[in-house]
Length: 114
Image (cartoon, rainbow, N blue to C red; front, side, top):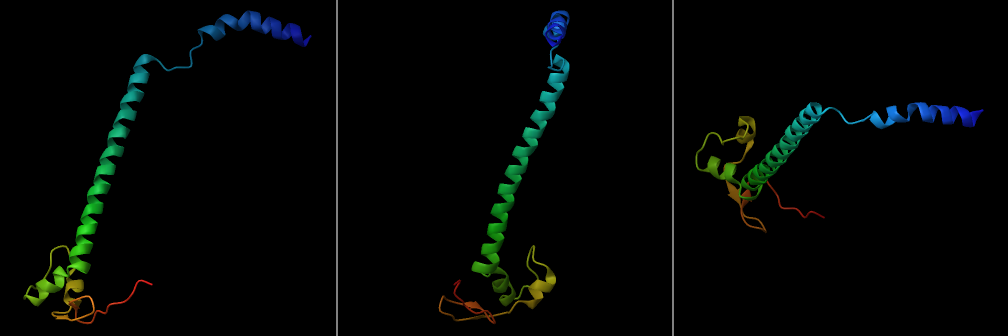
């Protein structure tokens, strides 16, 4: 009995299976491609933005903690520093002291990373 059911189903539905196409209509495929293209563009824009922000963060870190630009500015009489919150700037020292690696802001100390 099982063989005849299978054979009957196969014979009566084979044309329907061949006619069935799982792909969306062409206009829907184009709409999907448009959305996917826009997402690809947004992903690439986000990557460019992330790279730019990484460069900016590195530049700020270097200016603040390697070159001590805000402390130099305060020592020279500045009352604020661009992009630095005022309470942070106010807490900075106004002079440098000698250390094993060269001048550092007063109150800072040189330590090993280990």
